Image (cartoon, rainbow, N blue to C red; front, top):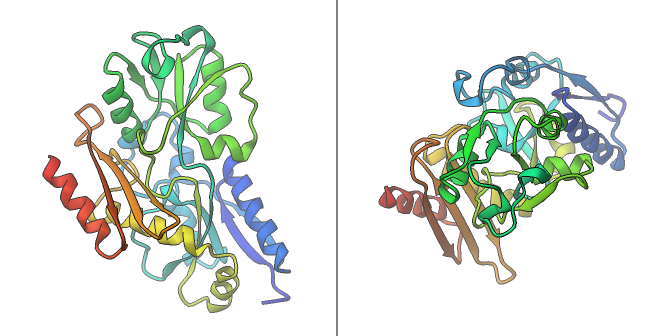
Length: 301
């Protein structure tokens, strides 16, 4: 493969391109050349519906997976939180990246900022998000808020906030930090992932390949972050056991401390507008930890 460029399948948004270009730089650091192939997904094409109204799972990943299966690309770079827990037949998740800040941030228009209020947001404020998980958790904290669907890539959503369409919006910190977007004109509330629980594997990139493409798999294993994989495997197993897609109102966050103990925070709702159930479990082993978390969540129901 030394003489062959690896074709990287990616979506065309600024964040997706950052992720793909980051992957290119990682490959270059081990003397592997690559090129980007931009592919539009259903999630990119349908901009007038909230995510929970788009049919099926994997609406930011399916077209990339099809391109892999067809041999148009050699690997696909995904935001791991968008990737279904089950790979299509013939594809495998070969490697994962470092983890950027896993938290969600609340970006507030300064005119709607109010010190002394929970989340520093005025009463009855309109908050933009198309995530069922984010809707459920923010309403659990502030039932007076009004949630409104918002679509578009990260810069587009921030522009909609600046233009006055919303009092605040919820976004993943990872996307904002990776794009290095200026926030000086906005108020930013950094939500703690143990309290406002992020999506499973939020902040991590996943590198997907064909199962039989052993050469590409061997190369990508050199970029694999085993410590991140250990944690995200637990988060995604909980999602899988609950048979959830990326629009299930489920947050899962796992940490491993310096002594080797695992700590999991999980939050789930039946629907975006129903009460949130929370659990926090610690264990000295990852063995059956996901099963224990799911059992506790079901007990809370």
